[in-house]
Length: 433
Image 1: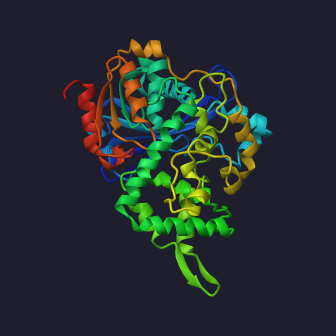
Image 2 (image 1 turned 90 degrees about the horizontal axis):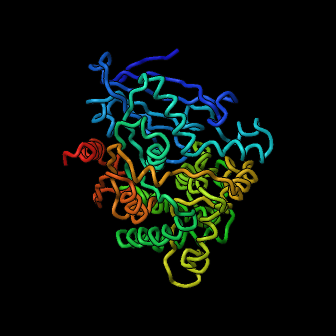
């Protein structure tokens, strides 16, 4: 049974769907997937085409909008929208430190989590589409990892799509995780350099915090061990449109005087733990590198291994000289499973996923080369999270895909640009631009 309710200008309906855990075994175990239907109040009884929104991640539920915020207002002019909590996220059957032990030990947990990648998400979408639309194709809007899923959709079930719109989410079709991170670290260094050029006072502030962490054990109020590597990972903020400013405001109130000397302030620690904790999205850490697994090569903690090829990110070496401390970006490391109380019980499970060698392909290059679905993609000129060169190579490999390459926005352009970004992509897909 579905529950409907109202917010300003919209009618919302909670929808829950039962899908197979393993789509290769449709008669086997099932899980629940949740979606929130949104329609404009004045169009609630109209027969509208559907737009499916796939959130970035992996591991995040769909946006919780109020009314017609961001791009949603533009979409509601012509669509009935489904904001999908991809399997394991949001209101869908959860996968976290509390629920995964129900599967058994780490090996059973790792086997379970192999079903939480883009191919399984697409199969969920196809079952849901047939139930909601009566078989009619729908439009998909994929942000970041949601765009990766959209490319999988074009590979696995293009008959389900009327149009595909992608924002900051064109994946490499064949790159190993090592290739992804070798391209990523130089991009992150550019973003850090640009941040320090904007806020030169942050060079000394970051060095002072890093030095404190190298010489003191700091445990945040939620039990998170704040190491210097964890502090560096706050550089993930630099991939967003306002991220540099947010990082600056965080650094400027790091210390307070105390009877025993300067200490990291409660306000700083409170904000940092909110930024670093994976309690709300543990799947991000667990399957982040697995989304690049497509062959017999393990991911094997790729971001950690590749980081060693870039010694300028070594905090101790930077502080021993006069180099600025470099922050890191969208990477997952083994130490996170020791630092974060939300991840500690899952370290062995994560190790088993990192060692796995039986990943299935996520993309079909031949099918994409013969694509007939209208596709438009926003590619951000120096996206910190998704390599622009990889994205444009993929764009050329998908027949008919039209790109909008822009430096007006960062990776979160669909949030910052809202209706204008969606309007531009719709025009491109309809060949109106």
